[in-house]
Structures are given as structure tokens and as C-alpha cells.
Length: 112
Image 1 (cartoon, one colour):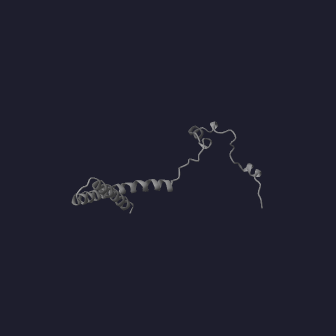
Image 2 (spheres, rainbow, N blue to C red):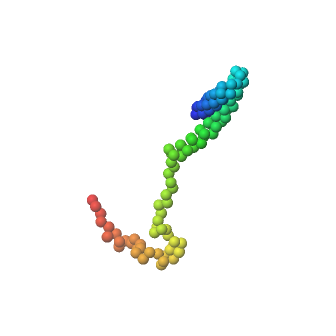
Image 3 (cartoon, rainbow, N blue to C red):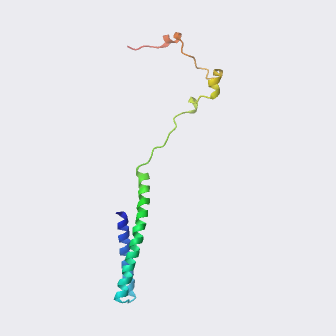
């Protein structure tokens, strides 16, 4: 529908400019109507195609502006990344790590 509005507006504007120019130059009736009609047809067709391209362009801009896509956020930090040598040789691992043993269960508190 947008392309029809553009085509109609451009055709009317070109037709009016052509008619005013023809009246200013004192052209004959047949010449004035022929030039005005040709101007309306040509600029109407150009406006129709230009309106189609403009409609696609504006629609693309509006879709990106009104529907922004989310960004992928990486939530891993450098502290949580395990180096390959830590997996192979645990002596390089963090010093505060202690495995869970049956003796460690007494440190848990149970709420009832």
C-alpha cells in the first residue's frame, strides 16, 4: 500500500509541475495534455518501483529497531575454568579443595 501512495504522490507532483510548466510556456492543448499524461505515467511507474524498494528498506529498519534480538552472554568466569593440567595432575589444583569423606558429615547441620 505504501508503494501506491508513493507512486500516486510522485505522479501527481510531476503532473502538476509539467502542467504548470506547459501553461507558462503557452503550449497548445494537445501538447500540454500529452506531456502531462506521459509525465504522470512515467513518474507513477518510477514511484511504484521506488516505493517498493523503500517499503522493504523501511520494514527492515523497523523490524530491527522494534524487535531487537538478545545478545548471547557468556556466564563463565576465568575462575571456574579448569586448566587441562589440573585434570591430569591434581597437585596443581587449588589448595583449599578437600574431598568429601565420611568424617566430614559431622560438619553438616540438619534443620527439622
